Amino acid sequence: MAKNKFTAIYVRVSSTSQDTRSQLSDLKRWVELQGNEIEPVQWFTDKHTGTTMDRPQWNKLQNAIDNGLVLRLVVWRLDRLGRTASGLTKLFEELQTHKVSFESIKDKIDLGTTAGRLIANVLASVAAYETEVRAERVKAGQTVARAEGKTWGGSEKGRLHKITIEQVRQIVKMKEAGDKVAHISKTVRVDRPGVYRVLKRVANGDIRI
Image 1 (spheres, helix red, strand yellow):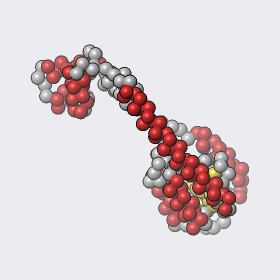
Image 2 (cartoon, helix red, strand yellow):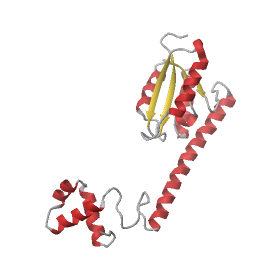
Image 3 (cartoon, one colour):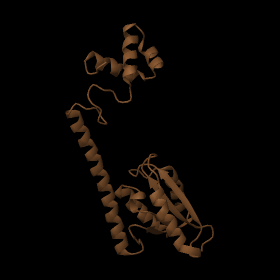
Image 4 (cartoon, helix red, strand yellow):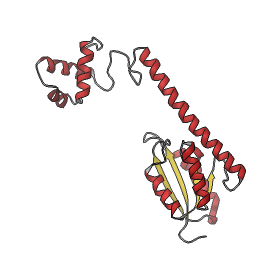
């Protein structure tokens, strides 16, 4: 075992509302199965979108790879590394350059073989494709929602997202009393753009109060 080198285990979910338990369970089991043969292990966890490689913990791991400190990189599934074909393809090349072995325990990928590299690049393209399709579906859903008179997120026309009817009534009452928007905003705890939106929608008859 090379001095000071370690196995890096990378875990990622896309947002803080998601948890890593399903990944951790399988990854910890993988570590146990390696027994005494495995070098020291360091864990890196990000709660960040996979559409960019610029993530706090990944940046630390990337720096360790660049400095020749990583012997092996392990992930639960390839798309946990990222969801851009260009970013993943570049990473595969860097791992080979720095002689870092790679293991995706769900995908069974070996970058040390021609077939393994082909599969890795195909899966990287699939991950990028799925991200693009998901974005297109969200955009299409928003378009349909607007056409049906709904706001982004599915709120019904005539109702405000995150602003209560009590706040709407207070905003209208204070405005009619001659209060300035800045004062209304501070009192009602709704930002000024939100106050303006309320007043505009009330004036247009879009909000029922």
